[in-house]
Image (cartoon, rainbow, N blue to C red; front, side, top):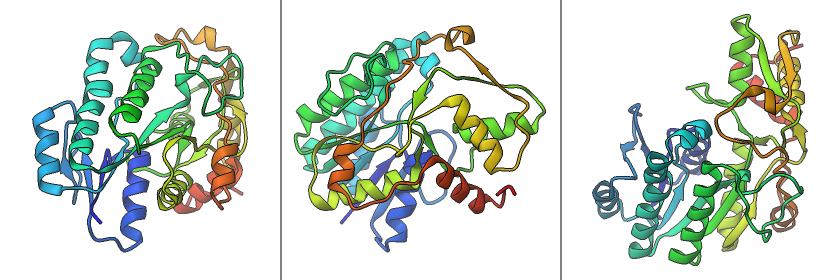
Length: 294
């Protein structure tokens, strides 16, 4: 079965791509955007002709749509450009999936919710407060209308080992390493989610024939300051440079939902899988990178 991972060069897409290859499946194709990746194909999904050409060549039966522009502040500053990538690009891929009768897995975000009435369930009405969240809602609607058997996976706080060191864990580690202050909000709540867990659960959902919306998140709710402190402890680094701030004092371009906590009851009832706690996930990540603290 041919499977295409759109956005395989990113954190979550990379884990999905590698997990499929690890299973011994030999018809796995991954796409990248920007920095060239060995054994992957280039794809700018906002280019409809490029998308159509990839689908004509690959003829995938399952498509994992992970690619997006995730910079929330950039999306707020450049809403039209963000729309072309995050909504227009997604629509190009979804229409190609529909024409080719390919099954689609789309990855969404907790930012589809306002974040003032947690926890949020799959059937709660989205109410985003920033452009990035608004675009994710539009994409979810496109998935469910263009690809009715599609799977929408909402997740949050994704972390794990990655070469480009872009996720929150690496930002904390690298900032501490430079001797700089790590300013993190203590009033933003979420559920840190270990990328390999998400990759495995998605495979279980696909094997069950699941469709619709699922919240695939880590098992513990935690504020970002507490998570940063845990990162320092697990990796054996000093925590004195980590400073807790109110979100309002950070003067970020895009408003942030403070508690868009996703309830994961539905997926835990469906899948026989034990998610890593934040401490366990960080320890697994630290072991992989040889950085486990005392």
